[in-house]
Amino acid sequence: MEADRHTDRRTDSRTGVLTGGEALVRALAAHDVTQAFGIPGTHNLEIYRHLAAYGVRHTTPRHEQGAGYAADGYARVTGRPGVVITTTGPALLNVTAAVGQAYSDSVPLLVVSPGMPLRHPRLSTGLLHEMRSQTEALRGVAAFSHRVSSVAEIGAAVARAFTLFRTRRPRPVHLEVPLDLLTAAETAGPVRLAPATAPTLPDAEAVRRAARALREARRPALVLGGGARGAATACLTLAEACGAPVVTTANGKGVVPERHPLSLGVSLHTESVQKWLAGRDVVLAVGTELAESDFWSPPTALGGTLVRADLDPDQMHSGLPTDIALVGDARACLEALLSDMGLHARVRHDIPDPRGGIDGDEVAAVRDARYAGSAERDARWIPYLRAIRAVLADDAVITSDSAQCCYYGALPHLPLGPAGRYLHPTGFGTLGYALPAALGAKVACPERQVVALSGDGGLQFTVQELATAAQLRLPLPVVVFDNGGYGEIRDEMAARGDRPTAVDLAPVDLPALARAYGGQGTRVCHPDELALALTEALRTPGPTLIAVPEETR
Picture 1 (cartoon, rainbow, N blue to C red):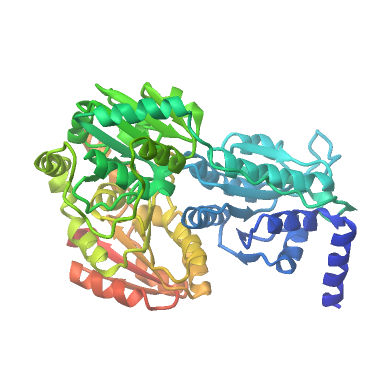
Picture 2 (tube, one colour):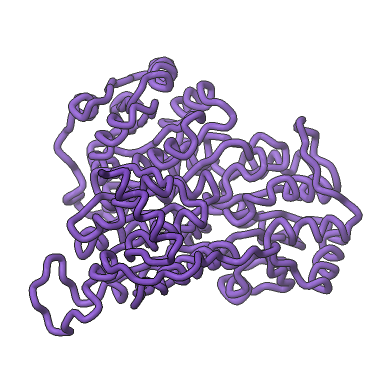
């Protein structure tokens, strides 16, 4: 009987008569969506009914916020939009923190939800999950929130979202389908597809001006953000040709190999690198906002020419003043620069000595000075991070939380190259990101090593996703540096001379909690123990929580 019902629905697809739920899933499948994250609810069952028939797999986290972070992690490692299915009201609001993080970090995320019926009264009637306006709530955190008014409009609305993902700065989108439309059978019309597009090319005259500035530069530098990831080869080629040291933001971590002699790593926030950068005569910034969240302070004024390459033209008017604007796809911009300079992007399989006009000793001196002021603080994490790096493959995916062990520890001190990925919640700075983002990354790339790094405070925002990881039975180490609460806020209170308040949390046996959720758990007190535990966790189905107590660091 169920097979007959599926056959009937496929017949309806050919005649163009579909329910809103099927029209939505058909539109997603037409845009090559094969994976969704979410939790079924009373109002979205018509969507779930059609997923399998259209080849869309589904992962069920234990909370909608976890679904959002998982879809975010999926999107970052695949480059394809992450899809979240929620139900109405509280479920949709649960995912808004993840939507805000995706907006901050330019992650393509599509959140689909039911909404109140088409002719629902403006005055409250007490309908289940009723709220004043879901679209108004989501417009505050998404690129746009759209409520369709017919089954025929659903395909066009999905195509609009994917057009944004492909042609503009990728950001999250919310699509609302009134719950009565989900079950209404209407003419859906033909499948609507986002148009095929070519990469946006920069202005030719701007390219010539930028190339001339780089050729004539005596003290050039590159600043790379997340938008430069698709141009990694061109970035390295240009850096080597110009002898330009490279600084990255958190989202740009690993775009060029962090062990390369020209790499200064994730250090834009350090005083020594900011001072050094202010003295460059030409700075090329690729795919980055150059925002306060990148500098960890108001952006430092530059003394030379600032060339910016970015898909978003609005970036040319924000933050630091832009002298030469290259508006377009990052790879297209850099390849145009290289072509004007008589060069071609090429993959390097070795790490050469620095070339061009930059003194290698100067680069080494800046590299040594960048964290001199924080060496004592960071020393507690570095041995453990070295142990992690020694175990992981070059293409490993590491997810992190807004935790001291991550932004003070792993961002600057755990080197990566272009084959690996480091997913970090910058800008919006949400807590609880690491574990569910690692789930999404592992679902996307089950053959790659994926490790989550977190603190004990942030972990407990989404710790229930250990159950999801256990159910999936995919190897997933979760390394938790346990400082007994909210360590960053505790330190800030102490620095102000305040008495620490509401920052110390009662001890939790986190390894036991992981075992209760169906995974494994252990506690380590030495980097060598962490290396052994991590090696075992990478071949153990399900999650393994590895706790590193503060008193042992």
